[in-house]
Structure formats: structure tokens, C-alpha cells
Image (cartoon, rainbow, N blue to C red):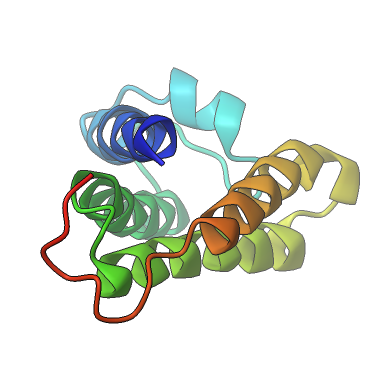
Length: 128
């Protein structure tokens, strides 16, 4: 669970928080344009790209919290929710399903891994 929690913190802070939230809002669109296929990012940032940036920023915060508090069942379930949300949003908004396949695949795998390592109810405070 520690490795998975570390990956979630990395993913939440660096990929979602910096790469998909902060950089596009600062006009640096290269990373977002490469990763997100359902909107285009260019300076000045469009409304659609801003909405996507805020969505991934929120997901990043929740994923980082799930990684920082891996024994907290609520935080873990919320992190699982961000994985499901990203799968649904990518599936619904990507014009060509093959462009969204990497994100759908990675998030689905992590959703399964997180479900397999779901903390027990009442395990609050038991740090590993």
C-alpha cells in the first residue's frame, strides 16, 4: 500500500496539480495538450481548457490526500472516485476512443488496485 500511496501523491501533486492545473493556467500548454485529448490548450486559455484544468486540479488534491492518508477509508474512497470520474469524463468527451484509451486504462487499473487495498472500516489511526 505504501508504494501505491506514494504514486498517488506524485500523481496528484506533480501530474494533476502542476502539469494539468497550474501550468495551463499560466499559459504553458505543452503538457496538457499532450495528456488531455478532449480539449485544446493554447494561450490565451479557453474556457473549456480552464474547466478541465480546474477539474484535474481538484482530482490532484483528492489523490494526493488519499496518498498522504492511505489508512483513512474516506480519503481512499474519494481517491477511487477521482479515478472513476476521469474514466467517465475521458470516455464521454474524447472524440476518438483510442486517444483516451491510455487514461482510461491507467485509471481503471489504479481503481482496481485501490479497491483491492481498501482500508478496513474502523481502521482509523492505524498507520502502516
